[in-house]
Length: 265
Length: 154
Ligand SMILES: Cc1cc2nc3c(=O)[nH]c(=O)nc-3n(C[C@H](O)[C@H](O)[C@H](O)COP(=O)(O)OP(=O)(O)OC[C@H]3O[C@@H](n4cnc5c(N)ncnc54)[C@H](O)[C@@H]3O)c2cc1C
Ligand code: FES
Ligand code: FES
Image (cartoon, rainbow over all chains, first blue to last red):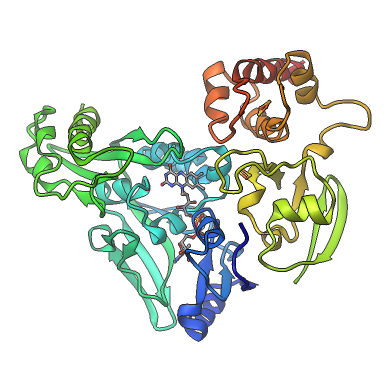
């Protein structure tokens, strides 16, 4: 399995990257860890004529504390996120989420920016990004903007990113009481169902991945939450539940309720 | 495109097509055929090498991404005739049957033990999630890695 021919450029700054994306438009693809893109290119599902490798951009692989927030550079690997003391102490739910992704080798290469941009309906971070109300920082030749997590995910492999935009970082509020629960696909380790819960005072925020073609905030659960786990019965209210060879929609809907219950406990 | 990299301590420089995978570069350009290609879809882990010390699946990396990096393959583990403690433990514990998965298992084991010098059996099993043994010899693979940890810590 060999990808179609392409040119490769490794850039050292965001400006250089956005200029190239602007110049090449649809023919260009950003390359971060390559652990979603390269398999797709080998299957020729993707045939970009130029790859712009952003992995060497200085500052994009840092995790920083800024006031009440933890700022995670888009190029941070899953491994880096799960082993960061800052993340473990101030945003443990994210470390917990990263540790469930794929396997050792995948976590050594894959990045949070790549995962969010790719937006696989079974990816793990989306649930946690939603439950934390994180903000996604993006840049293009025309400037920078911030996208709220709730506006970011728009469908299967579809996000609010414009074609010329690059994710530079994800801003998370610090989270004391958070918890990610995942039911694994036994082979790939992706989430059949993944549930992130963030508790704050009397309220709760719930992000769910793997269940619908777009990850979502389970607002019905949040509204019904009374401090017990009873609200879990509302996990898929109003949701069009996916069906595939891992789990049909009836089973998946049941699983979603079970996993929400676990995450609320 | 010109790439320069270090493999098993030796410096190499070659012109490669950007679409050449690192696994193919190692096997076909450098003739280091110890790195196996099982699935070519980042599932089986047979192609695992270390890149700047971290285990990665070389079938899912382009050779151009390894430009400037330090790579170790299974051929770089032994010191002359002296096996690496992980290799020695695989030999002593019957950690390989057909041997196809072994190079990847050994390279992943080196990452596991680097990050966690005293892993529990469960941690070893989790660490091997990305490596398949078609002979299903997991029991002795786990035992080999447990013994390797002891040897290295001695
Ligand atoms: C065997 C295997 C198991 C896996 N298991 C899981 C799992 O359990 N859970 C899970 O969530 N994921 C899993 N993954 C996916 C993995 O986490 C990927 O690494 C991740 O989805 C993509 O990150 P990347 O850095 O590799 O991105 P790449 O593959 O480099 O890029 C992916 C896409 O995002 C775009 N892109 C990358 N970075 C940016 C950026 N900064 N701005 C804009 N666009 C960008 C690229 O153009 C491309 O379209 C698995 C992958 C493999 C191979
Ligand atoms: S050949 Fe690379 S993971 Fe199977
Ligand atoms: S020993 Fe045969 S595949 Fe593992």
